[in-house]
Image (cartoon, rainbow, N blue to C red; front, side, top):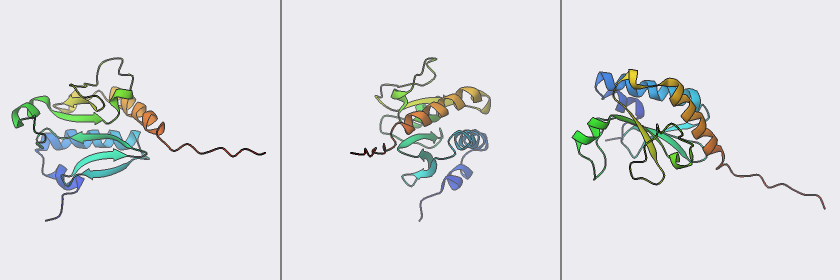
Length: 143
């Protein structure tokens, strides 16, 4: 059986979670139009990459990780993760490290939990961090 696409994974989520994930997906695509959306490890989880992995959206009902249970994951909610969150300012503390050194996340339970201006600002900052990883063009000097 073929791995699910992002659209197929979203279609299999509960309706309220479909709406939440699709709104986050639209925000990411709006703020990171240059990024490529890919399906994570055959699970259909959307992640976005340009120079490196930028961010991902992990629905609460898609179980993952040896340290988690379905109950604790559902309690936290759907996550928007920033792969280089450790390099972002995070002055308002919206991004949670949860013991991780690099990947920081924020959680949402329902559509009204999304502060769109805050999410946009974080996505734009993540794009700046990603741009810092672009291969620097070597300058040719005339001699």
